[in-house]
Length: 301
Image 1 (cartoon, rainbow, N blue to C red):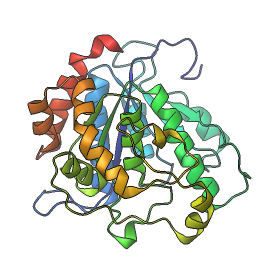
Image 2: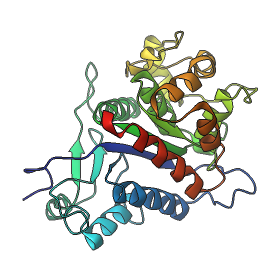
Image 3: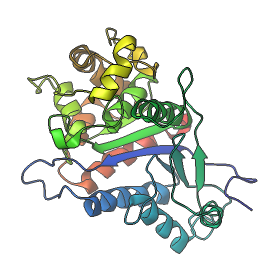
């Protein structure tokens, strides 16, 4: 029996954490082991509280998916801990993504987690290219948002650093934040791990004086040039059109004007609690607020 058969599944909580240039004195390092540890510890807490965890990472040696799988297999999260037939781990995979897994490995993995293979983007040639991949990433993140009950974000590529050039139309964590804002979905953020999430938090509090220094690669600039768009409203609906690039200056204005109000309306925390969460100094403090917010709105899921 695979993980998808005969199961009633708990609410999926998206966990979006990626390496970033962390704030000085934070105690965290900008490397994959640290990112894996943060993701794994947060995921364990969510699963222990009866929530499912959904991620959109690829499979590679030393990556977070292998760490999550090894945790799930060791603890038999779908049966041993909870004595249920529910799925507690989901991995969303964009169209064209090479998992690097052998068929027998996929079959084995699907015994303890759901592998969700997303559809191809429409309206473009689907041969391999940077534009096809960027569109496929947006398609995956958009579809994933429709399946989630809430999303938790930390870190994310720093668009001000040339070494952190995004392979999508936006840094992935930022795009996922915007999809959640557009969907009026419960959203939990903290700047403790730096990166684009810290940029969003600072923008929400009016403490980000400069616009994001983000530019598409030359190949993507050419592909998106005839399909540009702006985010001019406070409901972020333009973001859901995966075929367009976005005006970062107007995007920052919209986040500042409407973002904090929207987050407070939907995530089960008061304005003061959200401020404390967003300024959390440790993962434990951040997780504390995330669980309070989720438990306050659990009857919505």
